[in-house]
Amino acid sequence: MSTSPFTQHTSRWPRNIKLWHLLLLIATVLLIISPPWFIVQPSEMAGVRRLGRVITPSPLAEGFYFKLPLLDINDNLQVSLTAFQVNDLPIFTVDQQWINVSVGISFTVPESSVLKLLYMVGRSGNFDIDQSLRPVICESVMLVFSHHPAETLTENRAEIVKELEIALSATLQRVFGLDVHDVQITNILYLSARAALLCDQLKSLNERQNSTRGN
Image (cartoon, one colour):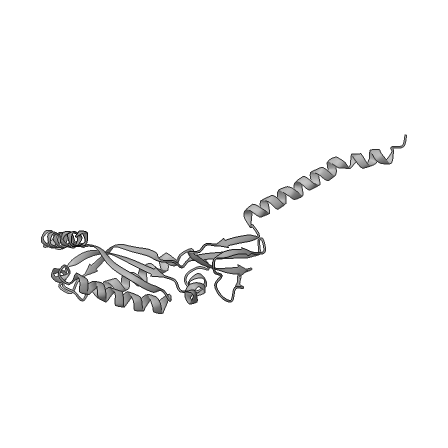
């Protein structure tokens, strides 16, 4: 008994439907894993790598961009004002006293330094930029504080902040191309025998500064 052409055609439908379902599933998975677009926010700039090679001659500004799925990787980097904190850095002062210092830094990334930070500092991308910054900042802070006696840190705090600004601005610009906008000493902890007296002096100074700002 022969089958009609209509019967043969309808018998292929389930097979075709399964094929389209499979193709749709693969396309959906690829779209989720590697979408063919990316967005650069107003506070960011970006670079693009294709199979391990940087293909952007200059950083990409804010906007919507297309890329090749699975082949291209976009690396976004925050370039707006960024706060960076180094806490409890142990320092041995010139008068042989141990102190712990915490310093806060605010910086921006100029356009000319974006690709350098993404692809010439640490691993490619923005994975370990903080880890690369920290030892450089710590070295500059330790060098500045090591020239000052522990007993004069309270009264010379403003002078030390200026020295830190000069040292950190020069170092971070030379090594990473960053623009430093502000440096603050957020805490000084004295670990010597005179810790109680010096901490009280520092606390009194901070209270006077806060009351002055409030007025």
